[in-house]
Length: 86
Image (cartoon, rainbow, N blue to C red):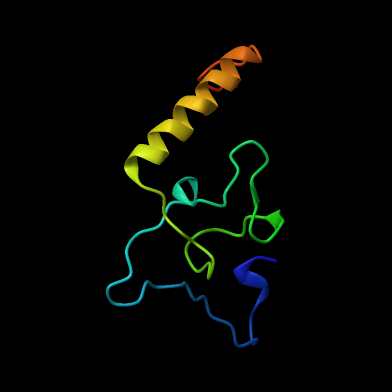
């Protein structure tokens, strides 16, 4: 429904803001996020995003690099390219 159809109806948009001292989060760095299927292994369901997740745990830089290398190797093994073609 477009905003032009909301005449006379009270509405507004909100967005989440990080609290003071809360660092930026990237779901690819979460220990529980699986890149292959986009699921959270802690919740055993689809990842809802790392921004407000209570279970988010960041991995170290070394763990993240190993995860990325493993993902690249599995894609090449499956015959997938590193870039997406549209």
